[in-house]
Image (tube, rainbow, N blue to C red):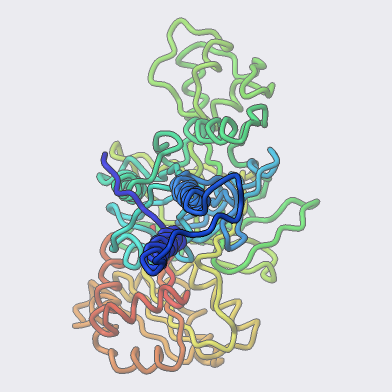
Length: 537
């Protein structure tokens, strides 16, 4: 690909000064009527002047050549030459960015971590940039990356002095897999940036792909013997209680789950954070598999450098369709651990337990989903639950003095409930909740609690909409349109907009409604200021 040559202002200035001196010398020479007296027996004045001009021209040429060479040292703004830039929706890309930067630092390299929305074209020049980019929904950038897309990617750029790599995060169950990471990679390449290595794509936090990225970073830093990054290191929590919130609902069971932290652990989180759950198969399914293949579940096997009974390994692994001819050791070598599942936390530490709001999902064959089946069906009260807390700063609370407009549907109430609990504890009362479900009769999830908050003044306003009850305002986006003037007034008063719930239907509908009510430019400004945040799935 051809690239345009680029000289900065200082180089052009040097050449102009040289040209001006040459013209001045020529003009002065024409004013001299007689031959110049020789002031040195070694060289004539004309020769001396010519040598000086030639040396100056050579100096200007060296400056221009050096300006075109890629630099790997710190920029003139003093920032680190390695920029690890994250575009994160749930906090996972931020976590990987911090790991990547630490790997570089451990190798003696200076590295800094940046939110992509804080990056402009100047920050990309003369830098080594490692981008870690999530994709949301059907190929969209994370919410807080939209400013970068509109401000930076929409303008012409010469990135020929930029070296980069892209770690694209996505989920292959969506058609536009890793779309934003690919778009970012193509934009960088199209504008002349030089790839440090090919784009690495990660499907649903695939550990093998993450190890591949780590290997590349190790080669670049000259430190290839760092320990592999590990899959989530769970703590063993306890299922303390489980309660069905919507008996008789046509929308599927929604369960309130309470988990107790280990006795020796001081677990801490804040509203907006995520619980990563390590699911297990039903004990009856594991027993049936062992019986079908005549295997001893008590046989000790080794997996990921750990010794455990075969039954314990099967409980947390995908059960293969066939295992004929394999003994316990051979079977263990083929097993893959079940992928973790993520849930918005519905409580705060002051509650004493971690609360979840989980919809029981079903697979195509009618069996319960991997994560929801474990939490809502297979695990018994008192059983251990593998859990890891993950910070999600993109959905953390605004200051208590700032009004808060919370919008959600279904089990998205979980993240909003945690925020309302935190707001009550902080004495913040300027809160407005718009929440949607199917039927008022069966789907008033935590309805008594919401009404109690309204009576106590924690909720200044509560709008509940139900799509199957025949009301003109069927969905939360309809309620937004019906209250457009109030929405604008709250935003004028500094309100932050928080959306939690379904990625399909609700989230794009709410986004479209807010853009119509407030205007695209104002929505972009709100997102850039951290006043429009989403936790959608």
